[in-house]
Length: 442
Ligand code: NDP
Ligand code: 2IT
Image 1 (spheres, rainbow, N blue to C red):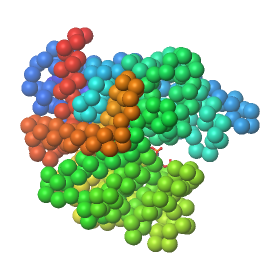
Image 2: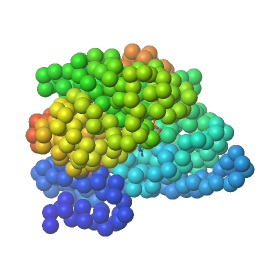
Image 3: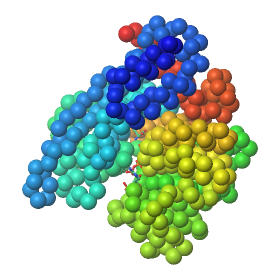
Image 4: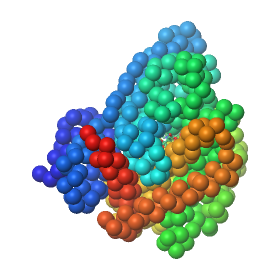
């Protein structure tokens, strides 16, 4: 049995019942093979055993009371995966589907993503199975405060710096920051994605979506053309989807679909983002309302956005939302590029089908790293007690995404094939973390 096969078997045995985590581990172990087999240093330092086992996994009770006076309990998580290159960094997800497998897959991917940004941030992730849908302002606030009451003892500006993810935006970060400050009597950059009046960075809200489109534009340019004039299908209608759509439109693309967990819209005239923002960011409503307001739109409560003919597909909702059948449909409809805005949105079989059909495919670790990159820039601004302009941050973001594309493409060329960006991103991300781990000893 090879070193990789042996570690894979050990990780599978130790993490039974964690399919999402194993999916993420399998992809990394498979693609870094050429590097791991090129030198005995990785085996001698047990790098694969160490990188697949979190530094620590914290699980805790989150009690709160609902508006009817009932006591409720959710489970909170923070997985501090790897801090070889910087303090743990990664989002908090509030969604009823959250479990240890999902938080671990997200934390594991975060190690490599954060490494790719070139900034000093380690990998972590957290969240809760709390469902924010339909909750009142007071219930959200009380949950966030209770969650932070426990989390506060495990995090800090130089220890672990959480941020948003599904179900966690500016509102939730604000309540959590307030509670941290109250408990610790410390005004520090312990969270990112903060509001602009209390230490947040300009362009953090836009960063993940913009960054996704910047790297897809770089990938398309390398192949000889850009986003201009292309039809774009986007899934999701949250933070990542909205700002990916905004930047794709700005670069001359035409975004024709968006979705939420109830259904999806197709607008042949191009999605009117002001309407989506009003529904999602202001009213916290459902995407269905778009079709009530915009005459050229259709609403579907079954099927997926991937059945619409497009040149570029940007999955921006959640894990495993694009399966093999969806990939085959996209290929049949002549898609040329797929960029992952969400974390692990494509199944392994879908990635294989897209790559086999020579579709340009930019994986999440590279494609959605813009959000955490600007989070790291927010940390820098907080440490300096300064605030940069939108243009400064956006320019840095563009440079970081271009750098990620170049690193990914170089590693792909050296160790796999020129456009195998899945291997390229995993290898480039892995090399830096592995070197830091080796340098620091056991
Ligand atoms: P939001 O909560 O703002 O939006 C999530 C969107 O995805 C909503 O439209 C939501 O629909 C939909 N969605 C979520 N879960 C499901 C599901 N199980 N089935 C169908 N639709 C679903 O989250 P973000 O935009 O921040 O996150 C989207 C993705 O991007 C996630 O994978 C996240 O991990 C990733 N990401 C986010 C970053 C960030 O900076 N925010 C950075 C990098 C990656 P509904 O409202 O109906 O639930
Ligand atoms: O998946 C991600 O990279 C995020 N949710 C953002 C993490 C962050 O720390 O900004």
